[in-house]
Image (cartoon, rainbow, N blue to C red; front, top):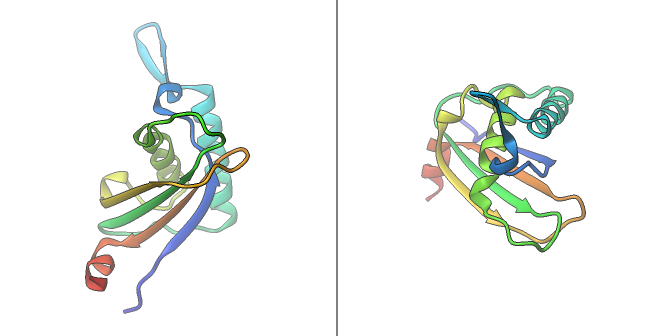
Length: 125
């Protein structure tokens, strides 16, 4: 069976530090987080994305919007929640392998996400 790889160019996600908001005793997704998720869902809807099944290998190439210092691990929550809601996969617990790479600065920032079945990635090695 041929390997299926999906590649998505998406907006730069909000940091986990801006993704959550406390309102009294509740913790909610922030307005910025909801806006990001809505934009990713809209993009994936236009592409008619179908959820990938099984264990997945995900590569993320992060193009920050400027040269400020940023922690790459703070971007994953918003990104994966948006991909899940947009139908790229059923649950982010399917991610068996994750590679994240910082790339060149791009005005406005962006992320390029490549999703492959994890077993297909193993067969390549």
